[in-house]
Image (cartoon, rainbow, N blue to C red; front, side):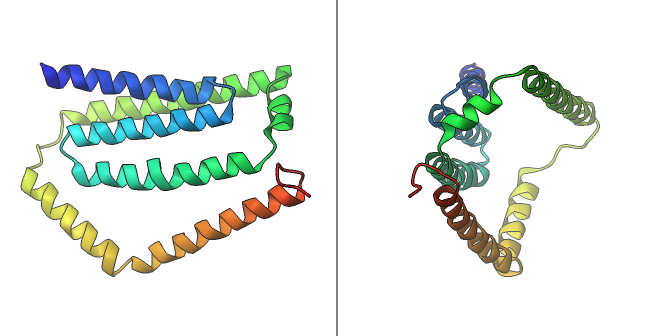
Length: 174
């Protein structure tokens, strides 16, 4: 019974913070809500005993991606962008259409996953542990170059964001 209560509590926190990401007009509060949502997803993985995925969720998404996102948000002057994207009929129609499209894609993916849920055999816990060990061995041996290339790419994105903020009249423009 307590597992069900904690599951629904975590789901409520995830959904409330995900809605706050979209509905809050301040980009800093939106970024904080996104971090809470990602941390809630990590808590959900932890409650499902997927400790490796929970750790990756915390380190990669709630940690690194959120730091990059907040840095980029803080570099730009968002007052002009807020006025440009929050008025006009075309903007409202575009936002509504894209929201309906994304919601229908999520609903379709959920219905497909629920329809396939009962058709498969149950996977043993030993098979999952073995596949995680094999995946981690592959990631840190064969595909280690991809991790290094991604790190260089992220540094280039940060440098480019700083250069754009200084050149286009961001908060640190001269």
